[in-house]
Every structure is written in structure tokens, then in C-alpha cells.
Length: 125
Image (tube, rainbow, N blue to C red; front, top):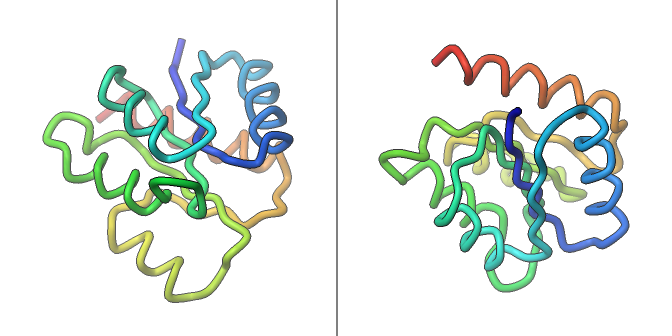
């Protein structure tokens, strides 16, 4: 069973994502801010990390940088989610190594397909 970390500070969004991904058959860990996300990433190995960009304490870009700069964890797919769709923000995310970028609001079924694709691709790396 693939393990996914969701880092999202909006409680309703976090619960919706957690419910959907558990329903899809994933083992799901959650973090309500970037600091919690970093602690969980240090403790565990994930098949995918889904992180909001704007979070308290540590933002999603810092979480992304930590993962992609880590010698062992750098192959972990990281998907950024954000209501901020400014071109420079999106490009910065991809420059730092993001595997995908999803704008809020989004369709949970589309997100599910994207996650499945990234997890499947990563299993063959």
C-alpha cells in the first residue's frame, strides 16, 4: 500500500483530501502545517507528498526544497496545491523540483488520477 503525506492548513480541505485518498486505498498521514510536514518527512518514507504552498511556520516551497535536496528522499514525487496561481509561483515550484501543480479549487477525481499516475511512475524508478 502506497503511503502519502498531505500537508494542508485548511481543515476542511485536509479532511476531504484524507477521506478521498483513504477511499482510493492509500495509507495517509496528515500535517496541518509545514513544520509538522517536515517532522513527518524526516521520520517516514512516502510514495508521494501533497503540499499546500501557503502554510504556517514552513511553507510548501520549503517542504519541496527539503525533499528534493535530500539524497534519499529526492525521488519522492511532490505535488503542490495552491489558490495562488501566479506564473512566477508556479515556475518557482517547478524549478525547485515539483512534479505537478494543482490550482484550488480542484476536482478531487482529477487529483486522484494525477496522484495515481505519479505513484505508479515512481514505483518503476
